[in-house]
Image (cartoon, rainbow over all chains, first blue to last red; front, side, top):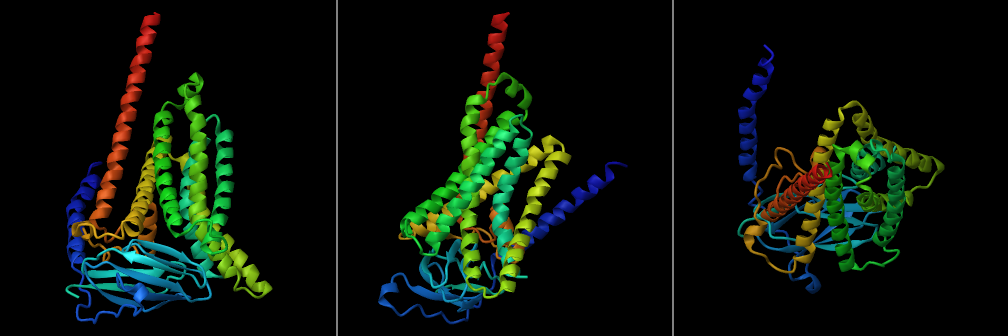
Length: 138
Length: 293
């Protein structure tokens, strides 16, 4: 009698494991917009190698909200706070966190990415989610 | 009220309050609790000073740390915090179960002097690291205010945010009183170690992104191991909290996994070594006791 609930709990385990495995399996191949055109890097000799993409944080707004880059290639981002409040460029998926006072800018290096989608956001104002799409054979 | 202020203050305070809350509750069980708490308060004050200094460099007011120096300073703070947490857990393991006896024998007095400094440093780093961002954010927001009402609003919002984070601190103090000590000890030990792992992962992320970024390492190091961002993204509220406190990653790469394994291997080895040397000490004491007879 006492053991019953315990058995019930254990019975749920395989299905839970299956659900997790399914989620991992499904999540492993996200379908990024592979047809999207590559974003043009900055046209500035000082930021040519490796290619650098400009990202402006403006009071929660992300400009641009999506950047399409070639997969498996190192690149940089010039992150600039053009807003009237402090901002924090953050992405756990890109392994980045940089706090920026008004008018501040920082150059960050992004290590080669597998094809897929990676989120970034302003941690001080999380209303909008930006994303980097790493595209195969770009 | 300013939702953004509430949110940022609450989130940035929670990590430091988790560490301080556990230390505070743990020290409360010791006979020398008052002394321990003085070291914690000292650490909080020092941490606020550190936070202000760091915030000034972030705002460009002072540049006592250049770009490269600041990178190393950040890595150093993260690694030191992780190491201090592991050391603190080892201290708890050594004295937690045999608290009374050790204190009576005064065996641990020497080790404790060093550990008070550990408590102080850990608190200072915990407050200083996250505090710097909070100070900068609050100052920047403060500059935008223009009326008495908005100042008041700002102040109340900041206090509400801090009060929300304090719920965790209070919960930890209540937990230490109402849950059996053994269980409180076990649960907080795991929480501390997970937090240390998370800090270590962030430190090694910075090493990869800022120190090793000039070179292309072998491609497999950057390969994504799994992707659970569809299930629980670390960009979501819950996901990012789990990532900060427990080292959750929704798209880890091989580097992350290697560092994760390295961390736990070192912790395992340290705990084993600690247990081994403790057993030896017990045997030695027993040997002396029989000789005495």
